[in-house]
Length: 494
Image 1 (cartoon, helix red, strand yellow):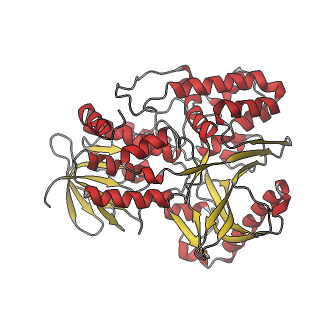
Image 2: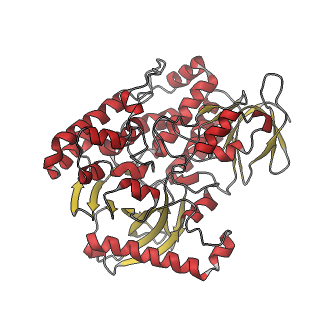
């Protein structure tokens, strides 16, 4: 089998980050991806010669944390983003407000407190709490090599809903200020205020759309992987491991193509349930089994993609539409829903710039439950096709309700349900993996097998930025402070 190597399972943002960090630390790295192409939700697809995002629609942190991460990984050319506005529409209460691009954190606070004047004092308390959480967030400044403080704050033990109630925040104002819960998919009634606030700070402070989506990051990674000697194996995954040695480590990994790899360390950047299926049975401790049984999924999305007639006035940005002010009911999939509309411009294969809309409407993972199981069967199922056509039409109608200029001018390019996501990202197709629940720790770090680690679920911040930070945290744990500090210093961050 040859020289021992570090195996990274999964090639989304987390897997790409870990592979590059390990290679920069001098490790021999093999990256495994079950799909034909690397990138996970960073990947894009083409319809009619126009590129559309799969999942990396927008993010925060491009001017701070993301910029540091990209520099550390040597992917600076991929850190290009365009600031965008966020228009929040609450149909139930008739609220409609726009947070201009480059408003910044406190600018966003001013917009919301100006719109909800009766709730201004409560909103200031909310924004002060979010700022405090962000200030105390470990590893937001990668030049700081001191050990993260392992302290439990009051916000770790208080749900978002309880906090909003304690400051007297009204229902509509709470829905608008907490609308970014759709960017982590965890219920305000369950999610810790600290978890929710970290996402909020990044989104409020620096909302931007990555230029050309995830394509530049994947291209830059391939270049860096070649420079660092990383082996990339697509269409391949792990099948099983050999027996643990007396020290509790597993070194022999058998792949789906029948080959075997001698592994020094194994890093999973996939869903915890998928990782657990690969662990030797005797290592599945009762506590780990209980933690996995307690896991609940975040939301998933019905996605529809459109091109826009050239005659329509068009400004790229985000329209966040909510049919109800009850974010918990929306995220439980109880009937109310939210749809995010990303309005963008893409250069097509014809050399022209096209206006596009990528829409993602909340929907429970695994829905619709009545659809056939396999992708092939769904393609030929008339009921499933009719459902997709109807939902895409409803999504277009909602946009036309708040932006009448779009009525009759959207051309449907593609649709996808949570079942499409499950095919693409097994086993559940949830948008953000395991739901964050106050008082329940996320599965991130060392597994019961001594040389196995999992970094697929962010314990700090969800989304692409959070996934990358989780991989950095696990890398630090796996290689130790000396190697971690060397990698950071050699990057020029400090």
